[in-house]
Every structure is written in C-alpha cells, then in structure tokens.
Image (tube, rainbow, N blue to C red):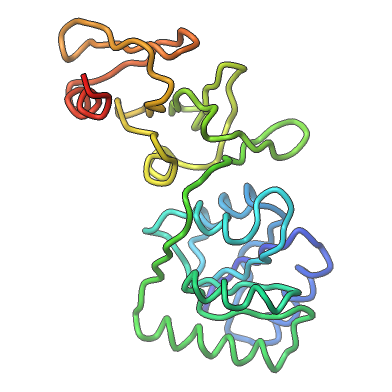
Length: 237
C-alpha cells in the first residue's frame, strides 16, 4: 500500500483530497499538514511514498517546501494548484504530476496510476530546487521565517537545531545537513556547528583541535581540525 502525506493550508481542501484518496483503496494517508513545519516533520517521521503539496501557501509555498526535504527521503511529489500557470513550473521541478483544484476523482485516478508506475520502476525523485533564503522556525505564534543572511551560525543539540542571529536564537525543523547544502555561504566547522562565512569576524589562533572563531556579534563558535583548512581556504586566509 502506498503511503501519502497531504499538505494544504486550507482544511477543507485537505479533507476533500483525503476522502478522494481513501476511495482509491491502495493508498494510506499517513499525514495531513497545514504548513511547511508540520510537513517537514511528518515526511521525516512517516517516510511517505508520495506527497500532495498545495503550491500556493502563505509564508512557505509548495516549491519552497520541496527544497526543505532531504534528498535521501524525497518522496514522489504531486503539486496541487488552483492556477493553470503553475503547471509548467510543477514539471520544471520534476513533479510526477499536478492536480488542479477542485480535484476531480477521475483526474486523481490518472495521477495515482502515474505514481504507481513511477514507484514500480524504482525511480528515485530528484529535484533541482532553489536555495533556501528564509528558514521556517517554530515560535509561540506559529511559524517564523528567519532570513538566511541574518543567521550567524547554526548549532545542533539534544533540544534540536538552533539558528543563532544577533537578535536571538530560533528552533527549526530543518537538519544541519540540509542547511549546509541549501543555504548559501553556510559551511560546516564542527560536527554540530555551521557558520555563515559572511558573519565570521575573527578566526582564533591555537592548536587545530581547539580553534574558536567569533562572529560579528561576538558569538564564539568551535572549529575542529577536520574543517579548519577548508574554512581558511573559503575565507582566503
């Protein structure tokens, strides 16, 4: 049985699509999400075969959401939209298919047949998705988008992945590996730390195993031997 996650900020649209998928018989909806943070969490936990993603969502749209999924767990993607003009863009993103709202049962059946064929061939979805410019974070009010250029460094701990800016820290669902790959100028300096090259102010002296750099706001960031030479080369020092 195929496993699916539905992502749409409109509850009625999610429920309608879930009902149509239930009628297909061989697909189980393992997640229904209203925003990107929920979706990233659900995809990482459930590892679905296919996701149905609304393109036009506030804050983080469907295309941006796809760029936040790790390549190794990337499912088949079906974009859902109320606008014809997004169809070409959907295929440029290598989507298996797209659906126009309101979704019709007959059209969905054809899409599911494409997905079954795709999965049956053992193909692995690959997306040339854009760089991440705004990073979704969890906050008391819901979702906060932190501009990537404002992030001085990123640290990982038992409590999660934290973006550190001059104005504070923010918790994100995105992984260090994904942020390293998708955020421009963000490089690894430690197993648990990334740093934004544009915010490096001082690279300290000392043994390669104990070097600490400081960001423009004075924040210390550890650098391990494994990454020191690459950091210096990237900085031109």
